[in-house]
Amino acid sequence: MTDSLSFLGQLSREDKLLAGRVLDSVEASGEKYINKYTFFLDEHQKALCQKVLASVCCDNYMFYGGYEGAQRTVLGIFEPYSEPVPDAFPLKAVCFSFRKEDNLTHRDFLGCIMSLGVERDTVGDILVSEGSAVVFVYDTVYSDVSALERIGRVGVKTGGDLSSFSFPEQKYISAEGTVASMRIDSVLAVALRLSREKSAALIRSGAVQLNYVVLTGTDAGVSEGDIISAKGYGKFIVRSVGSATKKGRIHITVDKYI
Image (cartoon, rainbow, N blue to C red; front, side, top):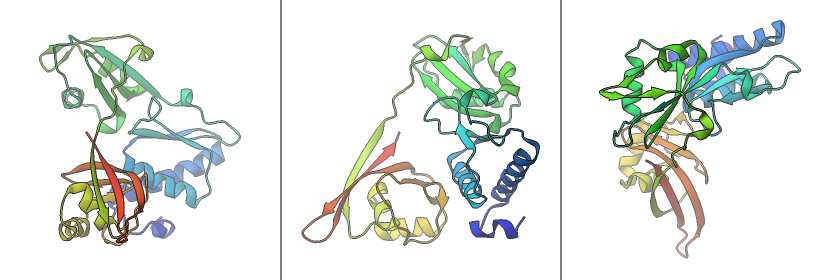
């Protein structure tokens, strides 16, 4: 397996195991005419899976997390000649309601669910709104999560339909600046409001991802729409890249997810 994954470069032990499982699933799906599913993946794992699938020319797959735009998703590799559809995924949504004055958070729900002994990779996105929340889970843990009656000290009720849930709007904080080039160290300096030297050091430490791939060099190019993550600082999207100024510098806008 190591040789077959050499094109991916240096991988952690966990990433190697995931890549190997994806290759095995592609083979099993094709030979046995069955659908194969991963557990929930984060965005880094999703990007890795996409590279592995492209390497074996597999295109009969779908990532789905229970709703359009989910951050944590399950990879479904579908049997030959079948159409990937969301309804085939082994996922369910648990809808909660509680008093609007009780300010529950993502952390509150996740901590309570983990205390049940549920594995993290069986839980997808947790979306919390005023007086309501929805948790996307693997069907194997649905009964455990849906049986919750309290989140911390707050009483909750389960039930209701996902269509009635008010999905919270993603919010951002914008940072603007100019860069001499669209190198990652320059763009990161604008996003984090750090010097270029400090942003370069952060990259070399392995704390920065570009489109969910860990970087160790500072010369990677960045484009509009790219996602940058930095440990301890958060996640950012390069919202816009403007034209060059008279001095040849490029105006950019970077939004931080909050």
